[in-house]
Length: 273
Image (cartoon, rainbow, N blue to C red):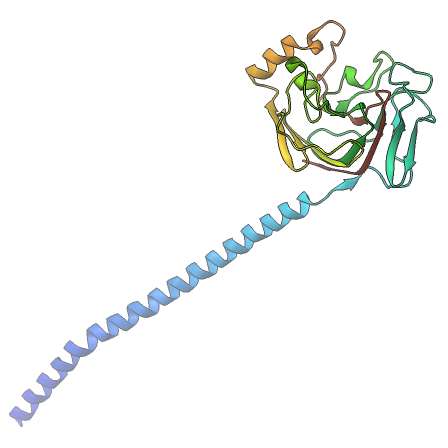
């Protein structure tokens, strides 16, 4: 009987020696699995939150508004005038300035076309084409007051023009297509369509940081708070006493410039940033 008890105790001890580590190992695996499951759920929840944020951002990013319905000039007016007048019309789904040589200096019927709505930070996209030798522009942050003679008195300009084949005066490069007029020149290597063919333009304005895009290529980029901008401003026409309000407003209308040439604009859309 004593021998049987001793043998039984030895068997129990051996089973304990074998069983306890296994139990601990199994327990550890279970605990680890639970932790991983919790972590997985947290990660999944975090990913869902991140995904929702991204989706919201994307959804917000595509909230474009059309500034031109392709048929009428609803939502537009002539700068400092009650009537749009005969020079701005709609032709083949595009806004047209007829180019009779009046320009903004002819207040009886000339003048830029501006949006009724105003914008601060924005991204603007459109298409344009211009007649041979023509000149126009896309302006932003334009403010209308009786004391302001023209839209460009307040609004910076994305230059629209039929560039000469070769720039004869390098100092005028900042007055060619895609440039920030009299401030920053678009590169001479830019892509521009032949006269009377369509070009795409994009302007991005965000808290003083500006981008000009021409035919899918960024051609101008600058920061209004930079020393470079201040130096260029001091050397430009805008620093003279004639233009004390230029670029002083950070919200205003979008303007299409009447510069006395035939010019067309279409597919005009904008989103606020």
